Image (cartoon, rainbow, N blue to C red):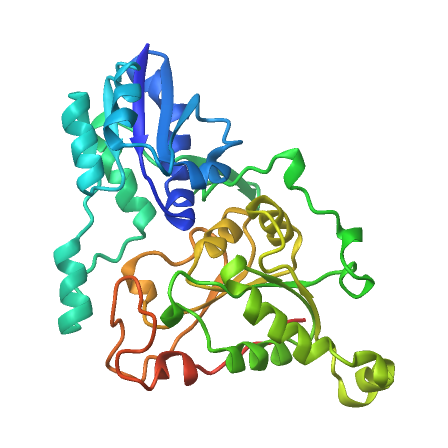
Length: 356
């Protein structure tokens, strides 16, 4: 039996994007190498939920917040891994690979190409999704992307599978827990983002909710609670002081808000994404979870761009971005505020869509 360790310590979206590697390894290794595979994954304890119910993993190793890297490596050493798949490629994973002294395969981050794109606006990034680049680490092992067989017009076609996200029983969010206005269907809007320059300003979030003009479930973490409350207040505060039915009939105002920001677990948020009609999202982890559930996604891009290779994978999506400015991307990650002060990448986005 071979024992393989996958390394990826953050963050939610990046870990979800590694799930095709997990699935492909587990499903193909035995037939390719005539050996059983025990597949392990190492990540931070704060991201356990993302992988907790993944049936393709035999064991998850969690780096605790106060745990030293040396102590963590000592625990990993006891497993006697044969192979390490490094999908993070940073100082931490380099130390782990050196200390474990096992054969390793490492993801190519293309940092120089990203630097050229961000600093000189010369796009030398390959026209490939990051999932495909993650899979490149498995080439020497003879592992390729998993495919599904699809039947259409009496023909059998093969289609590459997408991302995975598995829910536990405690994650399920019942539709009857939502307000009656949402129980017949709703739009999910993931309003968060790791950095402010990856998120719409509050005023534009409200504008987008008004344009959606349907029941909306807001999703985000505790850091998004203030914006979630402000959006809720704008559409719901003092609603009972006027005839809402008259507003619907005469003005066509159908936006209703359920604010889940900072109030739900990641699993519950994922459950609500899965049950939604469509999803609006910034470039964030919930966008990739929605892609795992094959939802149609309206993805909103600010200082980052889809050309960096992390757009929704293997699902239908629409991109909202401002291509009329020459300062994007200004970072491969993001900033607290627009470096130029105008934030035109988000302030000037045109929301052109129609949802039946």
